[in-house]
Image 1 (cartoon, rainbow, N blue to C red):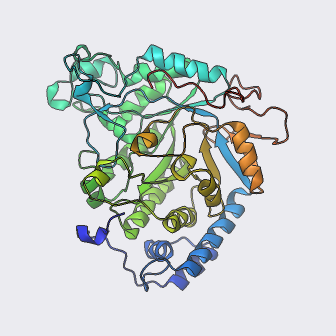
Image 2 (image 1 turned 135 degrees about the vertical axis):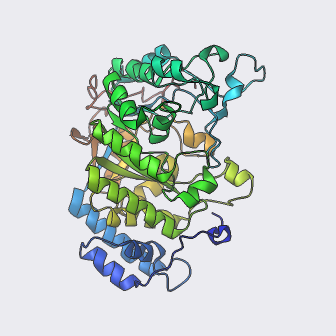
Length: 450
């Protein structure tokens, strides 16, 4: 990552606390202050760099906390990614998932690698995955200018609010309500509509986030991914995603999702221009939100993948987080977020070996089967798009932990027997233990539009 001090941020990693006091507070289970968190994630602001001995003490405290809170189970979900469109005009500098929306217009003749799916295509893709045993569809999409909450919203929009009518495009994405309904009708638990998508779905009208999430809950939305969080400190957001919503807007959207009865997750995307203090202030925002809503089921640290992003191409950053920073991010998330039970290690971001190692740093969830992944892959990720249930059973058992398939909200759980003749999902509505894909084939087919 870059030298964040060169950006002249107001929030800097400086405290009056000591590392030893912060570690004692963590070990004793006291609620950590921001100063405590900064000391732990830096292994002490009294020295430069990460101290290896102190780091191991933080990791040990976090692993013990994990064992006390959730035991030795390692959970995962049998899920599918069905991203509806890559068309987007937001221009975030950390992202290479998007394709500039004008490329999708009927009059644009140049080829591009993006896609937009119709509700019928989304429904068919999800229905196929449900038939094979998947329980959840995760859907995070670009902010297509023709997207509206519903038809009434599209009728109310005009070009002053990042809107063009559907006839301007080769494929009409229709509306958020139509896409959610199609995926829900296919039988999936629908995990979709990030705060940023909710922001897009209420642009140009005075309906607000409450109406967005209530409308989509009626359409079949089940839970909300708390992505688009990046770093919840506006001086960082002004650098990496100046076109996106502010921290307060993100929080307001998450509160509206909770008010609509929708469970949520929460994330951090770190390892770019932010410093250690920004990471802890982000955790403080998440913890305070959870204190008010009691609605966040898991926290997901996402290490920045830099290789094919504008931040890297423009020389703003020269890399991502180090292995030690990744370990400490997981560990301090476990220790600081005393009101969130589950911390995820992402094999898509970290790979198998490192992802498994992070399960000994405070994490207890190992993501999902995915079946198709676009966002990290387009940013330069190298760790694949699919993980079978048999893979989970083998890897988790190898580190002495218990593999457990879960539902999105963690309320339904099935312990996987790694010695079974065939190993597949059990939680989905059509799951019967059959592998998601042919073990001989090894990889699933791409979803429609990929």
